[in-house]
Length: 136
Image (tube, rainbow, N blue to C red; front, side, top):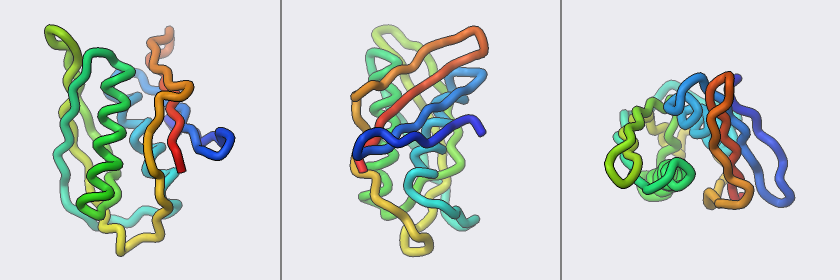
């Protein structure tokens, strides 16, 4: 599994790995979904997700924050994440897709927000690692 849920005081953290930058973003988003729901179902429609920021850490924050926003506004849990990330002049851009499972079809817990507390994303010899704390 490319992510692991970890307790973090009153919150929950996701530690994720991936061979590529896109893969670690996807794994972190999968961890967010796992923190929200134990059992996923196959229903749901495709969602398009975009984010941009000046740094990779800020891009990861913006992406996860957008997933939480979509959940709250569209009442769906984004799962099955696919992203592509590109470095542009002045920053980073992310284009992604996910499947939105209607919240009324699952038993979901509320993850309130992504935080910058202890957040990190870094390249390693094996690929990429990310660590993100969520307010629950």
